[in-house]
Image 1: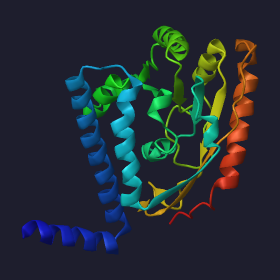
Image 2 (image 1 turned 45 degrees about the horizontal axis):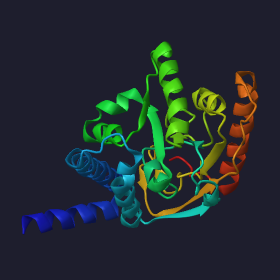
Image 3 (image 1 turned 120 degrees about the vertical axis):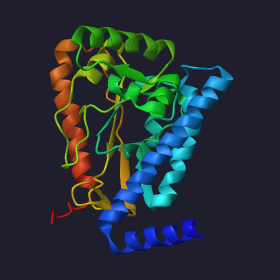
Length: 265
């Protein structure tokens, strides 16, 4: 009986307060990630099949259901650019930890998708363990020599495993709209591998999720997969121009597909 009273009280407080609703919904998201990660890690350990991108399939399926809980709708354009067996580097703008809900809309484990993240993510409990067991790629931001070695290893894996490697080129979350300057690591990987870059743009979350104003509500996000950008024949000397070209094209799509920015209180 007490549980039902507490549940009704929480729902009432969420109804009258956007701030409480924000923290309850985000807390539910973090809890869901923890549960999904734990189940994923246990399943991989039981089946004894570590370090395979196919292990992501339960996590991808489970995360895909959360959009119904939050009332988030995804409109995806250009998905066909990723629905093949060809290796590539997938660049995605990074707005929030909630980006995972959008990624699963384009993530198909049978095409050997994986993701690149900072090494510190490995130590985030069951989430880090699950990512490691599912063959996510971790780079050391603070040790340049080690990072270069790790990127060279990624280049080898891209061809041997025919990977589609997802990277957030901004390097960190950006809650302020548009896009931060791009790091060059993903472009070095693409050029060294001589595989195409597929830019993917998520429209702004601002009208439905805003950390500063404590907004977390239903809405629609437009995901646009742009045509592959070839890197065949390019060298490291072409990378600065490549970075500017890809970033400008992604910003243009972001501006065209995003709703007007929510005004701050």
